[in-house]
Length: 401
Ligand code: GDP
Ligand code: MG
Image 1 (cartoon, helix red, strand yellow):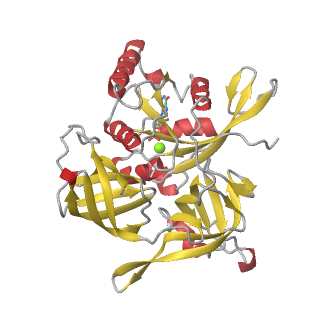
Image 2 (cartoon, protein in one colour; image 1 turned 60 degrees about the horizontal axis):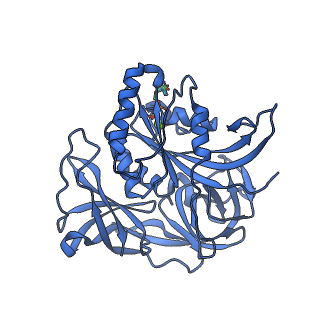
Image 3 (cartoon, protein in one colour; image 1 turned 120 degrees about the horizontal axis):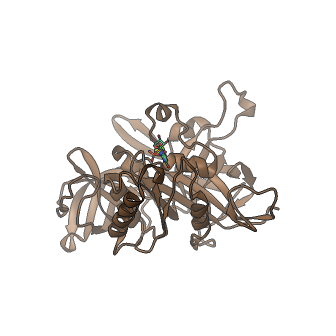
């Protein structure tokens, strides 16, 4: 039964209220907006997660085993629900660092909106080329409107990585065409990842799973959630976590690398002995859970002992700027980067801000000094955002030199 099946991380992105979270609850049978504040405000603030196994049955793909048919597990999918609110672009970019493919949700009654464009550019910046486009809320529009919206999407994706992406009209609410979407997810290309190298695990969240009042002897260790980008990890491994814990000393933050042991590894609600790159996992560590609670280690990198470079506040980046700013209703041209300007960078799942110290090669290479240090691995992908009228807007992407 426990035969290994291919695994993939799929992000669900798009404008606020276009139906991302509702769609995920239909696919994975679980509501991903788990934080009470989010439920109150009705928007996804943090990244939401849910896992599902897709089965291949005689009549097609399904997310539940059908009783009357023969079904075999076909693929394991970790969904990541991105926040659609414009203030939360940085979180969305962190999510984009851990996904292999994406579902772009466009409500047919509203069409391409500012965060549709901005999220789409973020996928381009992260070089996510496997994109399924969902035309949602088809129940709210006429045939003519649906066709108009389809043409709008076609025009929007022309000459991009998503030029030939499937566009599936669905109604999440009335469960129309969800099976077509499942079929497309089952057909997504599984990315190849390196296994025989030092592990690199991106921490997307961290938490304390103990209920208040648990006796000390029964306490579980601090838990890290995220994605293993390469290499292998197994129970018993000695690991290090960088930049690690941020401590405030005389008004400056210093970072303390954390060393720990892997106590157990989990995929969905299953415990596993060893993991290779695939779906999201969680790692129970020997750390005091106080250190991992409330996402305190989000953005960190983890590897086995002594395999990560030193943290740094100085990075050099090869830049690729977009032509226009997205995310606002009017599209302004992007001005060249200037010395001393502040930029927000997303390096893997780390979010940091830095000032531009030097500009080389007509702006195609820049050096920054960062407020929050990062682990900079050569060729790592970086999202670059600039503050425009009080909002961080994605202006391009880069690679660590
Ligand atoms: P998100 O911000 O993209 O995560 O959007 P939500 O999933 O929170 O959905 C926003 C609203 O749209 C909710 O009131 C949903 O019930 C509604 N909605 C989602 N899908 C559909 C659909 O297919 N048809 C209709 N009519 N409403 C939908
Ligand atoms: Mg949502």
